[in-house]
Figure 1: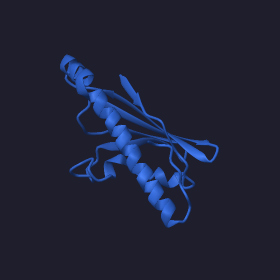
Figure 2: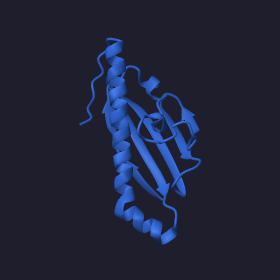
Figure 3: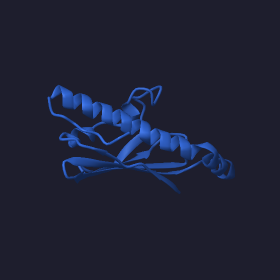
Figure 4: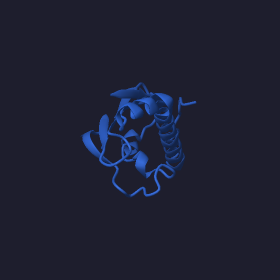
Length: 133
């Protein structure tokens, strides 16, 4: 089992609303964003939720989303655990490119959430500051 974690801080007075955003619904992630690929298996709103792959390319994939209040900010942490299919070939593919792809996936999702949070902050006239690069 492998893990990738990429923490990011977002100052967000509407943190609970972000929990409703799923990466499989953000444009560009899937050809058919309405097909079920993951199911939420744990929910402790607004602190944490876990989704696990139902159908997909991995033998196993578990995505843990954690949110922690830090002063006026929210620390958003993604932890992804996966197991590549195809035995030794899958392990080799994991070392060559899957880990890098998963890091890209997490940072792309976090940038999308940052953009959503900032747009919502502007529409409600509440400033949302981000510490993401």
